[in-house]
Image (cartoon, rainbow, N blue to C red; front, top):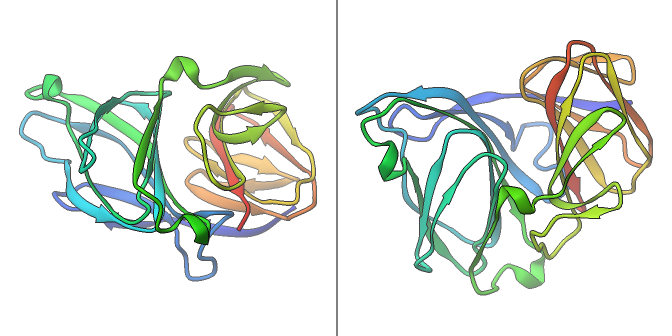
Length: 242
């Protein structure tokens, strides 16, 4: 059963762009390698509204960006310019240092569009903290997608259910996007890594306990879990080695 619930607090990233931040929390600093967990949107950006994240540095970690709606234009000090859209994955390894920005794509200037997604930061193994910075983009069509026990699953990062994401990581990592139909149950086998479940839109029931949306439910290590979506739900399962 779940061992811990983490509630979100709001964080303004500038320009009125507010995210729900689940990690770090007072009671828990990380789940697996993930140190930061930000859920943004759904927010509708109109012409002239500025939700851009301007150039800023990272060091000693990696970021992973995944969208449900909208589009973001990534630019960094390596010279990478990459648009990300729903279902694709941006994994940026900061290593010894990188600067990047995330802005409204030029073709969406003067339009209204909805932006909704997750950005997580992952700690790198100590041996990789000073690695050369790098950037990997996996197209939506290259991210493994399949059905399992009636659920539509997408493997964003890591390994799960006998599949592997095309995004390379230097540590054991888990990140699965789940779309569950009403009443469906997803059975997770016991695992020796840390894992947590985060509901994007609707409540889920984990081992008989109802977990509201926008709540990070940390699962017990080395124990199975049953996740039920009474009304259907979109949720992610994240974790890995600490």
